[in-house]
Length: 256
Image (cartoon, rainbow, N blue to C red):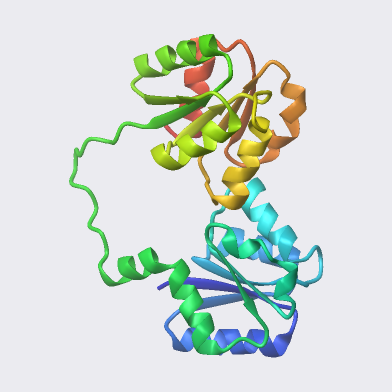
């Protein structure tokens, strides 16, 4: 059964969400403020969140930013607001939709299925588990650094360890290559052309809803030390030994 978390500080609207989506076959949980919403999602693991923009304890944007950046949760989100003009760019983000209040129930349901087509298909046609002894796919690593020597070194280290390695030399190239390759993990420099590693991090988490783990490899770890508080992020100081790099990659990929 697919799960929906409805976040709204109007009890009448919450009751509508519960009744409507339960009748459509969803399991529904509710929350009335930002703090409760974040806590509920960590426990409930909803397949989709319907999120009011103006809620107590931080607002809907706080919920969105916390889930995407700190908790690495790419869950699809539908912002429901009486002022959709306040979110002009949000509907262009991956796994995000914006609907105005009051919302037509059928239009709301249509937006839900736009964001959950694969989930809907899986519910109807579950994928059987792989046969015992099936060979695991090779993990792909994207290394981003404007120093060609570092790229060559990390590529050699990772390739010898059995990883498929791809490279990029700046922030724009990193995002472009990420979308083409869909890596399982990134090794990311901080200070580089076209925006730097922090911009890449923000683009992946906020706009592309990617939960791919990230290792910041930098000579100035203090500049991004605060990002290590996010799930799936590690900050390491250059130069990295092969043991340090491979150990960090395996830890973030759950291979140890």
